[in-house]
Length: 160
Image (cartoon, rainbow, N blue to C red; front, side):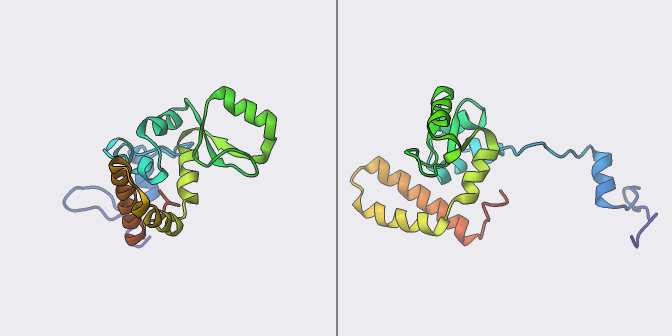
């Protein structure tokens, strides 16, 4: 490091490596991902809207109350389908490891990572003109706007 031992004139803090500063500031590595409260609780919930879930369903997954299907494989299950404990264990008995489901923010992260923005935007653009319900039209429009803004801003859902 080229500034080894240099002390800031204003604050009196030694200039050092980021890893040293993290250690001194109590930086911790989390064992598993967490959902940021701004993206979860702000209305409409950005995460729930992106995954086409209700806020209540998303909270049930994040707070480890329900399982969510990540990859249905060759089963009758749907992606983002919520499963109770009983339904999950029955599905495991019936299909074994043919499908993937989980709980918590890590599962939500996997769903966001697997979300294909281009195909979802196209599907929504085709679905909106055929929608008669005012409430459904409003929800689809909000979701389309969110996904387009993700795409325009080149937000990678991989790195959430």
